Amino acid sequence: MGKNSDLTENIQKLINKGLISLAKDIRGNCYGLISNEKNNTMAYLIYDNDFRTALKKLYYQHFKKMLLMQEVQNAVDIAEILGTDNLQQVEVCKRIYNNGSQYAYELDREKGTVVWIENGRASIETVEGVIFRHPANYADQVKPDLRIKPTRLLHYVEKNFNLKSERELKLLTLFLVTSFWGLGINHPMLVLTGEKGSSKSTTLRKLESLIDPKSTNVGGGIPKGSDGLELKLHNNYFTSLDNLSSLSRRVSDTLAVAVTGGSVSKRALYQNTNEIVLDLKSVVAVNGVSLVAKESDLLDRSLIITLKRIEPDEIVTEEALQKQFEEDRAKILGCIFKVLASAFHDKKPVEKQKLIRMADFHVACIKAGRVLGMAEEEVSEILWENQKNINRNTLDGDVVALCVMELMRKRKTYTNSMSTLLCDLQDIAAENGMAGNVLPKTPNHLRIRIDKIKSNLENESGIRYEVKPTSTFKEITIWKK
Image 1: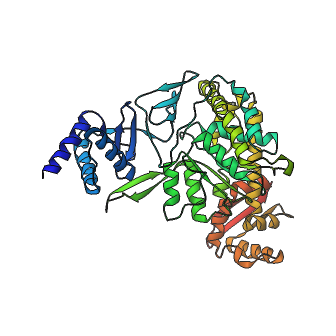
Image 2 (image 1 turned 90 degrees about the vertical axis):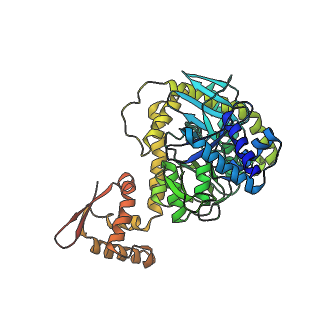
Image 3 (image 1 turned 30 degrees about the horizontal axis):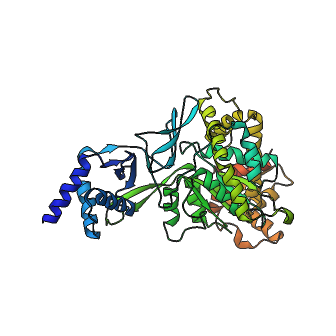
C-alpha cells in the first residue's frame, strides 16, 4: 500500500512540475507528453512501450529509483488517471510541422532545435509548442548550411545521384524539395528502377538521410506480420522499401492509402478493448530491378525514375560514395530549406492549366521550380511526361487494357452488352496466346477492372466508354478519339 502511495505521490509531483502531461490528437488518440531538462516536449502514444521507457527514465532521473515492470504499468495507469483532468488537444507531428505560415523541421530531439521558416526566411531555432513524436529508429539531422544559394541544388543532386537524363534530374529534385513540404499535401510514391549496378539502394539511403534520417540502415523489404507495414507507415515521415521484386494487391492498396492519406484501427497495446487509430500518411519510396508497382491505383500516384548503370571504370567504394555525400549533405539541406523559404513566401498564383491527379503536389512543384529557375510550363511538362510513362506502364501490364486496345484498333465505336464484351475480349486473348484465366470471370468484375484503367485508356490511347442500363442488361459503348 505504501509503495503505491509513494508512486502516486511521485507521479503527481512530475505532473505538477509540467514534466508529464496527457493530450489527445484530432483522432482521439491519447498521448503521454514528457518534457526534458531543456523544456523540449516529446510525445508518445500512451499505450506504447516507448512511453513506458521514457517514463522509467524520467522517474529514475528525479527519484533515483528504477521501476519494475508492474510498477511501470501502475505508473502509466496513475498518470492516465491524474492527467485526464486537463486533457488538451494537440497536433502531434512526424519530423515536420507546417501550418501554412510557420514551418519547423526537427533537427535535434534532445536540444529541441529545428529549421524554422517564416516570412520567407529560414533559420536554426529552438522553439516551444511544436510537439513531435519519434519512431524507435529516429536519428537527428545534420545542421544545414543556410549560407548556400538555393539555385545550387540541381548541381548537388546531379553530383550525388546517378540519373539518366536532365529531365530525371529535375524530376528527382522537385520530388526531393516537395518531400520536405510536410504531410499537408499528398506526395506521390517514388519508384526507382534500373538494372543491377545502378545504385538503387544507395539512392534510397541518401534520400532517407536527407528527408528523415534513421539510426538503422535503409528500410529493407515489406515488414512481416499483418500490421507491420501499417505501423511502419504510421511511425515514419519517410518510408523506404528496398529491393522489392513485386507488390501484392494488399500491399499495393495499403501504399496507395498512405500516399493520399488514410487510417486503420488497431487494438491498443496492453488493452483488450481499447482501439487506437493509426494515420498511415507518409512519403514513400520503393525500388526494384523492374517496375514493382503494377496496380493502376498505385501507379497513378507514383513518380518513376530510372537510374543508369554505373560503368566499370566509374565504380567507387561505398565508403568513398558515402564520404562525398556526407560532405555535401549540409549543403543540399541548406539549398532545400532556402528553396522552401522562398516557395512558401511565393503568393503569385499558379497559371490556370491542366494539373495532374495529385494537384497540390503539382502546385508545390511549380512554386519550387520557380526558385530553381524552371518555368511553370517546363515543370508541368516534366510531370505530364511522367504521367504518360505511368499510363504506358499501366496499360502494358494490364491484360484487360491490352485486349480493349486491340478491340478498338480498327474501329471507332463498339456497342454491346458487358457479357458480350467479355466474350469478345476472351477471344482476343486466345488469339494472342494469352491464358484464359487472366481475364475477369464475370461482367461485373470486368466493369470493375475497366473502371480502374479508365483514365489511363483515355490519356494514352484516346479510348473512352460509357455504360448505360437497359431493360435487360448493361450496355457499354466504347469510342476512340
